[in-house]
Length: 226
Image (cartoon, rainbow, N blue to C red; front, side, top):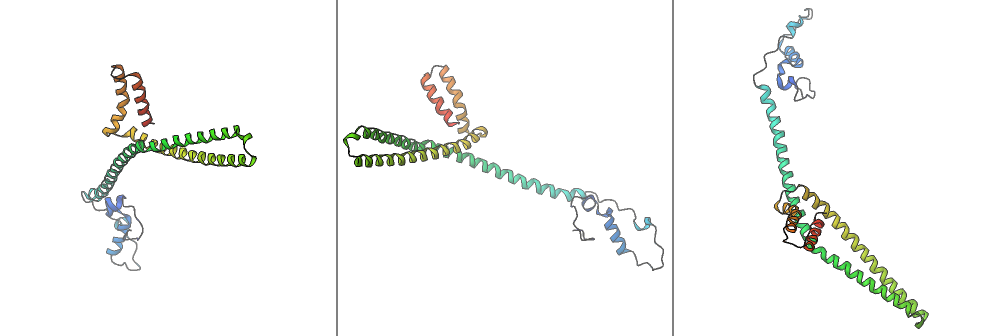
């Protein structure tokens, strides 16, 4: 706030930081305080006497005033950038570690899906066999057996669909994070993964691995980088 007119000021204005002695508001206020009260009948003084030439701006005043502002901004964002670097490093490490855990533990979900699929196929087989035995069963027994099998099948299919949906969602979500890290990371582990595909090409050309092994390993690496 300006001390003379009690209004907000721009801290970067030339008058307030550069040379306040040239500010018309300051000049007017200082003259009103300094000059003696003029008699009522006195004639107005010439403008040149009321607004004398401003004093020369003190050497280095502007530099001393602006430097703390510059330093504060630089220090603030230097600290924020360092925090971002630390957050990204932590994020990168977390993504790699979680992806590694997922590659191991997702096998239980894949096995569960396989087991559910086999169980569903078994119940479908029983349902087909029931149709073959229909003539040897009473209508009531047939209806009851068919109803039980269909209810069990519906339950198993719903569970399989749920497991597949959640598995696919996790695979996609983790894949998004992992691809982001792969595209920007400079860690040795991630870089080695990027180089693995090109290394496989060299091993194949040098005859150190078979085509079958090459295709299998290539597929596994491509799955990791999806």
